[in-house]
Image (cartoon, rainbow, N blue to C red; front, side):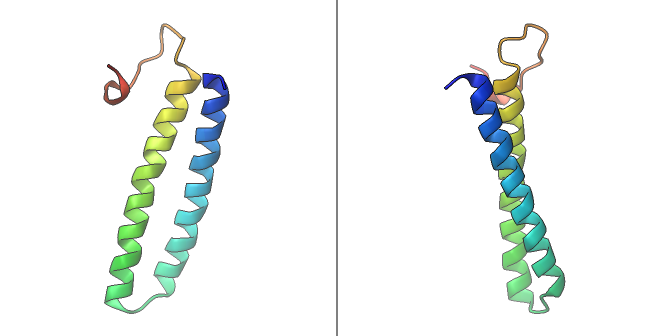
Length: 77
C-alpha cells in the first residue's frame, strides 16, 4: 500500500467519524437526562479528537514527499 492509498483510507475513516458525530449530535438534541447527555458529549468529544487526527494523518500521508509541505511536528521524528 502506498502513502497515497493510505491517505484515502484515512479520509474514508474521517468521513465515517463525521457521520457518527452527526448522529450522536442528533441524539444529544433529543436527550433530556443529564447523565445520558454527559455520556453523549464525552463520546462526541472523543470522536472529534479521532476525526482531527484522521484528517491530519490523511494530509500527512497525501503530501509526505512534497518538499514544501509543512508537516505537523506531532507526527515528525
